[in-house]
Length: 209
Image 1: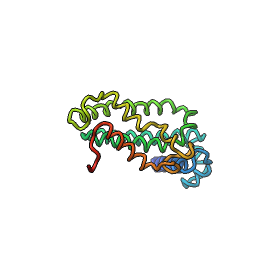
Image 2 (image 1 turned 120 degrees about the vertical axis):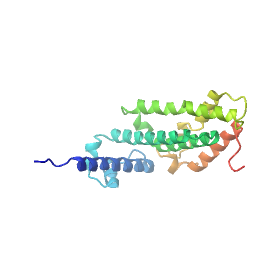
Image 3 (image 1 turned 30 degrees about the horizontal axis):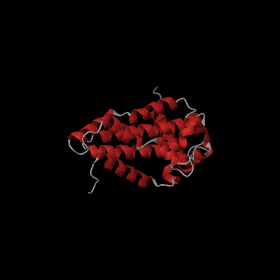
Image 4 (image 1 turned 135 degrees about the horizontal axis):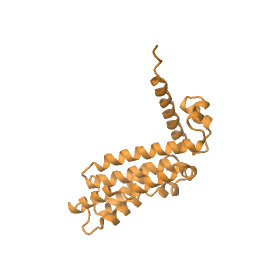
């Protein structure tokens, strides 16, 4: 007698979990982490019991959303660092981190209370110390794209500081709401302005110039 395959049920459970995380991510961006689990269930199209089976506490859901954002950011950074163009690397690096921090700003306070906080913090710090960014800066100096005499290590920290997580909080109208939706400076304007300033400081020509 053959047993009924369990894969479809497991696949359905994985899909429900993904829907919950996506719904929570959208609601956190729109309203901060004060949203109720019932609202997440409604947005995800699942029952409240399904929410609590996957995430016994809201802190667990916050950590899952933050982890998803971090993994997406790391994948984007890997793609950027595959480029041989130093200007493209610096520009995209700043843009990607600003996007990340605009999405994680609403989660910051609640995330600190989760068991995932230290791991996520270590991964973010790793982005700021990224050796592939320093290698791109060295290429830019060697090719005459960036100013000669720049200290690559110091320049790496300067570039990273342009995407400091505190920017998202400091420029938000409400520090619990993401810059992307409630900021006094729209994210696209902030991103373009910071990239332009950094490239000017490094001596790189502006795109389209």
